[in-house]
Length: 152
Image (cartoon, rainbow, N blue to C red; front, side, top):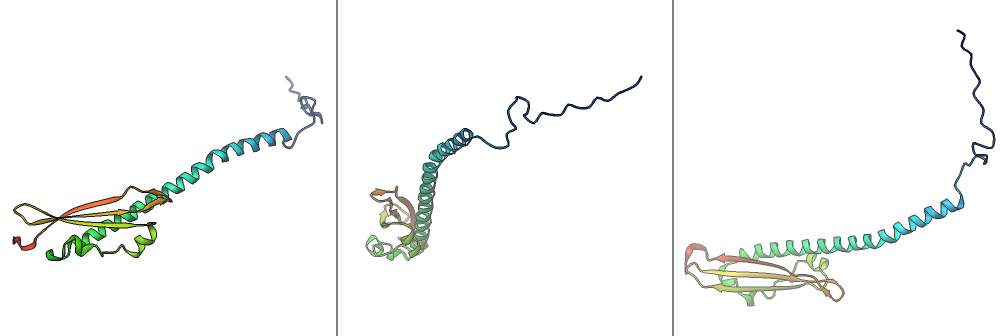
């Protein structure tokens, strides 16, 4: 048995379907791709803007919560007699919080709580504007401070 090789057919210069070989894209394919990219961009750009605004709002809220916690710690460490609403009205926000929170407003309230252990409730509220004309939900923090030494 003898094996013979047949030569492979060579492709014609016109290609399989009789058309000339294409090595690029047609104008219609480019226009379709550009339209698809345009639709994706039209959907993505507003979403990116919304995500950036949400990121800024979360960063401001974290800054306000940190400021309220730091302030509460400083207030709770004060002597019992100096814990009054009138004495704390002049307590400022830190420079970092004042610059990070637009139109920031700090409110501190101290209320004596009736009961056998002498105690005071301290409330700290920080408010700011998230966008022009829109107030963000305030950060509120409360703590109870008891007289040291168990005295009346």
